[in-house]
Amino acid sequence: MIRNGIFQKFFGDPSDALESGIGIELRPATLNLAREYLENAQPESAYRVVRTALTAMEEGGFAEDSAELLVGTGDIYLARGQVAMAQSLYTEAAALFPFHAPAYLGLAHAHQRAGAPDDAILEARRVLELDPGNHRARTLLDVLLEQR
View 1: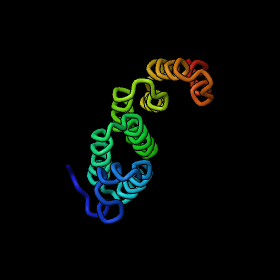
View 2: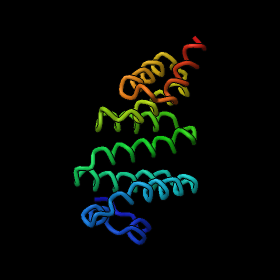
View 3: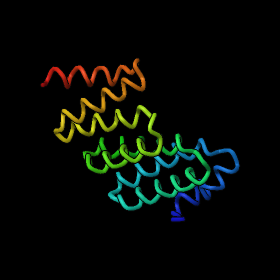
View 4: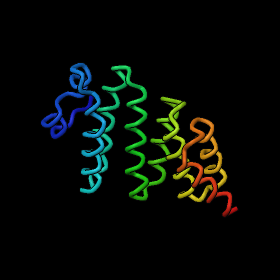
């Protein structure tokens, strides 16, 4: 398992966190640390810390938590304009937990940013199939269809 000194110092071994019942704290801590690395132009460190947490979560059988971490990380990359990386993370989240609507919503936004409105429409519709009351997906879909 990849280990990061700062991560270890503040949060210990991610697998220990999961075993001790504080796995729920792992996701926000990982996202905060990844965001900090990205803000300091250290994308490799951001990626490493996310992969470390994902490995621990997946070994612990926390697929939905892993999907949420991937989506959260994708959101960070998308906000920074790194659309291809965001798409990759959202796709991985959807593959890991296929009924996780936020993964498809992230993909819809990433496709929109990448100039692929048909793909964005497809993903927004998928979100609404999984979560018919999702207002963000409905709004995005309406905007995309209006722009056609």
